[in-house]
Image 1: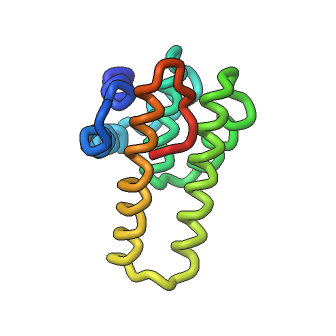
Image 2: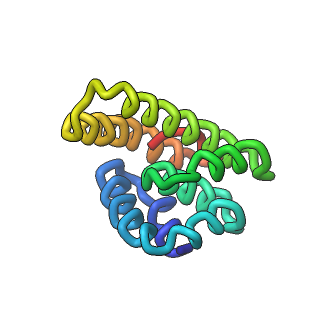
Length: 137
């Protein structure tokens, strides 16, 4: 799982980040338990943040629990901030879905828009020296 997370953490361009996230998500679907372990235990805080992003992106049952646990207990403040932002994103996503105001295509467009809008900010914050890994993409 670490190579996938490192690829994400090292992206310096939003389009590349989204493509890398899509590749990582495809691989992580089959290795979800490893992804959750990385969210809790990866040595590099950037890897924990990327694992949290993937967990939020994959829309698996129980994702809110992982995000909430990391928000409340991760030893790194940047990871806690990332977990809080991803938890908020998942709650909003679930609320949008529950309204039944969007059909499947409209909901997919909404999800794509959220990712596209937040990726440039996420990548820019990673590129800043000493940057905090807060809630972006």
